[in-house]
Length: 263
Image (cartoon, rainbow, N blue to C red; front, side):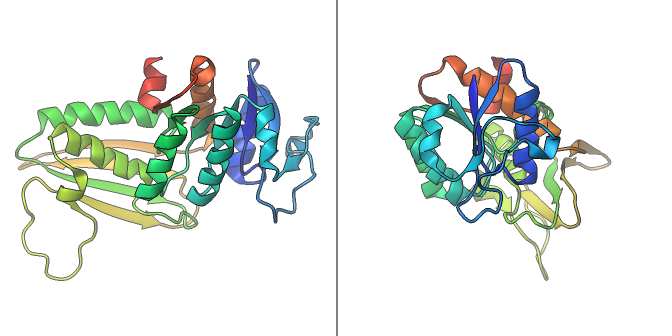
């Protein structure tokens, strides 16, 4: 399967490149970066001491030479890439977060033209955690206050993280609610007593934290915590590779990592 990687000179891009080069069923055919990148024209595998046979480019027409794009960039960049994917029928795996309503609608539209896996977190462990949260929300639907805590590195620009939002959405949907209707995004000053049935969010940004997420179900006399901690971005890369292979026989449609896990 021919793979394109966007953000090829970034840390996540390089992890994806390494994962693709090591996989026996995948071939790296396109490496994209933004037009102002100093890495344009260089070999995307040079950091590994390897020769990939291609160079980093900003020309999106190169996507016609790939079966699938794996994209972990910024919303505006991803949506631009996705337009080209729809044009060339190139499948897409999107791990970018921070989309607004218009961006989410654009992803849905693109999925009518080509196959897309879109998930806030590509880690298999995180997606297993989401399944556990669904079960916990079913069992602990009364008498427990829910708090979602997340921590990431200081360079992350969106908050709460896409993964934290997804965790809240899973719980809210299990309760038959809309997350926006029951979320407490911030607390400051005299907030009063907590209301039942709300989901609170706490955000930390600092240092080089890759990604920590904990959901607390706080009851009277006990507290249940479900936690996932990332010690390496390798899990995101491996999950993305699995997602790309999942799309191999898909012509169009919008899928998530739960679909990938189920096969």
